[in-house]
Image 1 (spheres, rainbow, N blue to C red):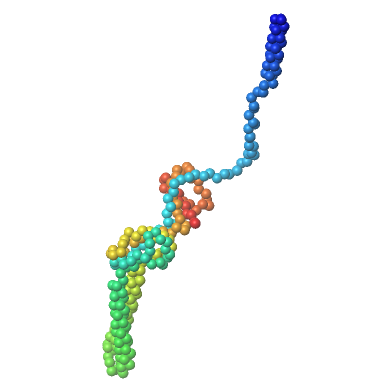
Image 2 (tube, one colour; image 1 turned 30 degrees about the horizontal axis):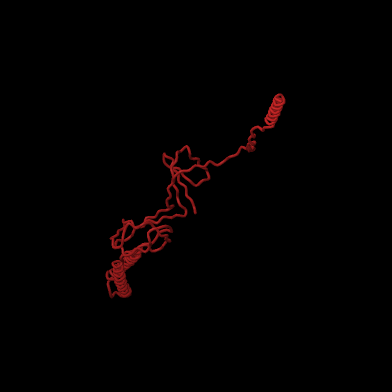
Length: 242
């Protein structure tokens, strides 16, 4: 009976070993990674743009300083600081009362000179035929002619004074010289301004200038580009239209 058990155990052990061997033969190995994708391109010789970045400063293409042409007290500012203005737009008003009075005085003086000229012209017209008849001397006629010429010169000077007075009165209205952005006014209402006083600055922004600095070796200038390089540090300026 014990012999049969030994043979049964041996048979079972053999079957177990066979099963283990079979299982070991069918075990799968590690999974291989997928094939990498490779981009293939044709090699072509061509020019390509080179881009560089610099820090730049924008500036108006034209920066017009606005100064008064006459002296006086500033009465009113007609624009807001930083506002867009048009050429000919009223920016400031200077007290014009003294200039109105000066114009009235110049007009009155012109009328006086014109009246004096008229009198001397009448004298010449009256003395000339009398001199031909011997009723007046030639000296009196010459004096009348010279007086008329002097009066004519006085009239022309008075006319010029009227024009100057008109210009001074017109200049009490300070206008924008160009289209652009009007800056902050460093003056205020009530200040006494003269021809050297800076009232504001009007900057033209279309086109606009951009100025930046970079190493000279990094700058490549195209012969068709509208740009200029100034200074030893390679300062570069370009105008840009919006």
